[in-house]
Length: 471
Image 1 (tube, rainbow, N blue to C red):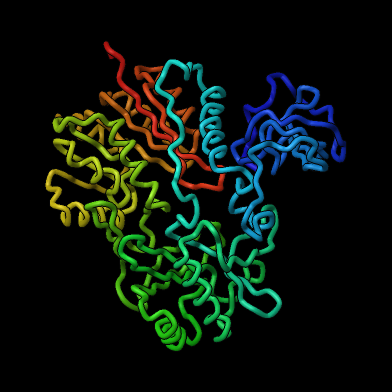
Image 2 (image 1 turned 30 degrees about the vertical axis):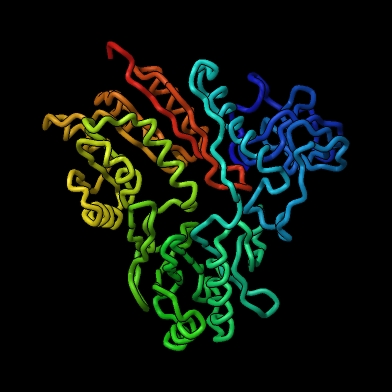
């Protein structure tokens, strides 16, 4: 569970309820992890699997500081939005949190998750801004273009999947319902070959074995696909035979890559990448754009919704063809290129040099000659450009879940672009950052939630901030 700070009543120092205690509970809202939130004796209780509006009998399973976690003992009054989850390992896997909630209700609750974040961290009256309904999918399944599955041994066979929540038990995923079918097929073939050839899975506790993770990425539009074998050691046993078998069973494979990650870390990728077969990169298309994707390059995981996300960002940018635009977390240049036809000039930056090289090539490939990409942080480049007399009109930010660094917020407040388009994957850090920006010169004009990950509790949100007059 994530940090619940801010969810409790102010001044509370301990819980009056105890572990194992049972009581009736009405679920008021959905929490940031998709769990139900209720209150007993004015104290907050989080219940995984419970839905807003439901009446349950709850048993307290954990006491954590100022809040409790519980489980459903009896469902007294189910929500009309409750449905039967179609995935056979839904309860064990933990990769999805909302398969038991109708999709229409998922979209409604995701908007409320954004609302809760702004109520918690800001004093902004959301009724006075353009707070739009969540943009959803027509078909909210099989949407992920990339899978990253941990490898292990169970009962003498090789498996690949995700760890069950709060455990070291690996759940084998043979047909994940949110993955593109091709990623499922490819992963199953690769793990079967690795098992047949007795290539040992890496055991973190024993620090033995080789194969850590099978990463598969597929181009929805191009059909190209790449297999990345993440290994703990440089040498893969019987590697020639391994490659031969992959190519025999997957004759249309575009790329096979080895990535070496010997460190004890939760990060998937290491620093060393070697192409074993085919191209280093695969190609994906979105509308008229083509993107070359190297193994570690960031690219949105849901291509269908990415179009809607970027269209919403473009709408928020309000470009007329005269603006100087900065893409502050540009990656391989996707958002910036989507906005390029409405900008007079485009500049982007990213700390990953590999991504910047891809962004430059992507811009050149599309004839976008008014774009420039540099390696580094926006808080370094924006003041430098300001001194040179170059001032951005619009800054687009798409940061990781941790949100904007305080140094970048301070830089934006100094540079003062007319508009900031904030693309966020974490409503809590979005609300905190928006609060900082609106305290010192900006006004929140609109919020647009976008469902990039159906069946999960995650929600993306685009906020448009405009510089107040006189600033």
